[in-house]
Length: 258
Ligand code: UDP
Image 1 (tube, rainbow, N blue to C red):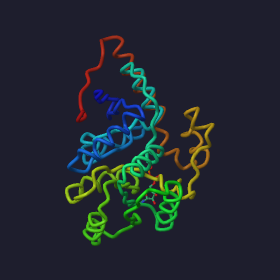
Image 2 (cartoon, helix red, strand yellow):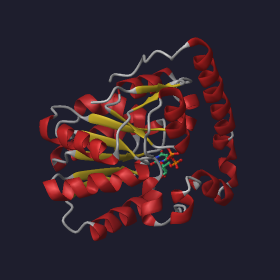
Image 3 (tube, rainbow, N blue to C red):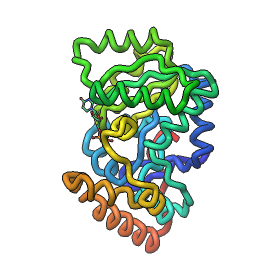
Image 4 (cartoon, helix red, strand yellow):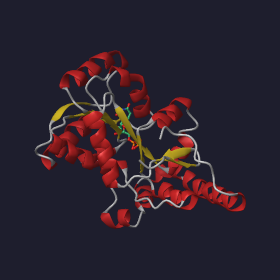
């Protein structure tokens, strides 16, 4: 397995889509505990180190996907790594296909009730052989959490999609991973159920192909500027690090669980 790459304050696994799928198969077939899959993108470079609990979740994650183009470009500049972007919002479909073929069932937890219901129906339509063991909306009160954990465990699901948004989903995983008895793969999918249900539009093919999905989303939802204003700062910090490396030799590869 290729070594995890540090990208400023976070890390990314230099995996192709096929390698990421092979990792998931390994987790499902040989795993004895839940394995966490989260997304690495420029926004996370700032949110993750600002929150000790979130930082630990990322440091201990089993697979950090090259979700954002910024991370892909930074990996190229800082490590000479030629990564392909693998957005978490697409990888969910790869996992569904693996689940369908390998008869692994899925539990979907997160999003508003209507979004949860509609997205699960759409997944079922798209993958007729997929076994959806259960679902719950993302607004389960804290006192009902033990019952939700029991529901997930008795469903026998081996895959759990967590759609609570970040950092809620990572913290949920950290708090409850030891109580999950059958789940072997957990993917944090943020707002992806909203796009599957059609409540939020994903960027059309053209924008995705040219790595401009971030711009399309910004134009559609200008309030995202608060989150996306970190992008130029990220680019500047990467350039600064690159320049530093050119002047004083390569950066050391530290951090992450590898
Ligand atoms: N959400 C949830 N429970 C909550 C708060 C939010 O399930 O208590 C859901 C929300 O309905 C939405 C998702 O979490 O579907 C957050 O989407 P967003 O795009 O903000 O997350 P990101 O992908 O940026 O992490």
